Image (cartoon, rainbow, N blue to C red; front, side):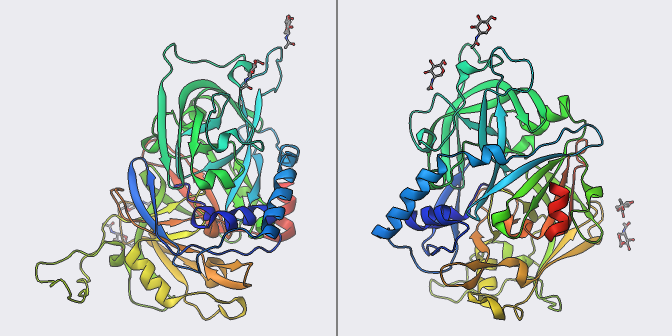
Length: 468
Ligand SMILES: *[C@@H]1O[C@H](CO)[C@@H](O)[C@H](O)[C@H]1NC(C)=O
Ligand SMILES: *[C@@H]1O[C@H](CO)[C@@H](O)[C@H](O)[C@H]1NC(C)=O
Ligand SMILES: *[C@@H]1O[C@H](CO)[C@@H](O)[C@H](O)[C@H]1NC(C)=O
Ligand SMILES: *[C@@H]1O[C@H](CO)[C@@H](O)[C@H](O)[C@H]1NC(C)=O
């Protein structure tokens, strides 16, 4: 979906969050609802937390300027570690946290002239987004918006000997939850660490809109979703499958201490033991998002009340007077096809408005020392698409879903309200807050047989050693 936390912040707060990370920062989430669009879909989101942010004070402005100066040093470019991988090896692409909101890694684009080795024409800092399927990069075409900022890198078409463009360049536009992008389509090779993917369709950004893109210092977005999610470009996974990896498989390791960043790993990773306990495998319920079948949701391990019906919007009945209280829905009205979506582009968990309200009644901002009494989120998810009684309870304790608000040193629930919009099926997103605690594997199979693997992440020095 690409819904970073910064999309919910006031301009100054978002900028400061980015500037000061990892130092403590005043974070104030906006209370008002945001309208946002994606693929022509309008959804409404609100965090329901905290107070509206204020304008920047002179001190904050100074901090921002210092930060701008720091960013011109592309430290990330040197920090990226990769290792070659073949059939049995793993390619590690280090990700850098952008202010606890998104994780960015490098992407090489194009091939420099007079060079035959590994020599991408541009090294860009991109978000690897499992919640979209198009590949966009800043380019020399950029005329308007954040893509033209000083701290951004751009791919210049004339610096690549492998760049191809149709005689009549095809334009296109897409909407993310947090902004929109306009550009034209081209084709060039891209470098994912050691692997080169030939003739990948690229969206070359010419104009970019949206506060989130302003405050996140990124040069592009690499969608890792399925073909049905792509607007116009051929998804990277399809190109990869054809050329480099017969069954593309990747995994995300996001460190719970976000200042330590994370890694996107290509290849088979289950044996690396970046997780604890057995890896649980779930069939992808709909090959569009990386989604698994959501068959129940409870607040508390011992609760018997299944809140899944609250994923559906309330339907007004003819007997409802204009002022009548909303009656309870009949428990039999349940979404038969709800989804839990693994989305590396969204910071928080999301719940549709009615469920979000119910969650907000049970959990709210509180001192981080006293969150243990909050109920667990229990997602009952399907393990076998042809037998709905085969399920697994994915348990998320408060220590995982509560996030620290550095301004107040209190903990706030990492949950955001997001309606169904025009998506066909009701869904909840498991975003980065979830992925910081669960190691997740994305295994693309032949049509209809893709799987997601989830297990609690292994933390600390052991995990660090594996990623070195
Ligand atoms: C590339 O090589 C050609 C032929 O060797 C040479 O004429 C040209 O100046 C080189 N270009 C660059 C950018 O080095
Ligand atoms: C792209 O590269 C060409 C050739 O080096 C150069 O003339 C042009 O100014 C560059 N364009 C931008 C926007 O940097
Ligand atoms: C579905 O799975 C349940 C639990 O494993 C099992 O008891 C039941 O027989 C299965 N149903 C079918 C139709 O195979
Ligand atoms: C899924 O359930 C069906 C029907 O119960 C069963 O035939 C099949 O073996 C199950 N698949 C797996 C992988 O357990």
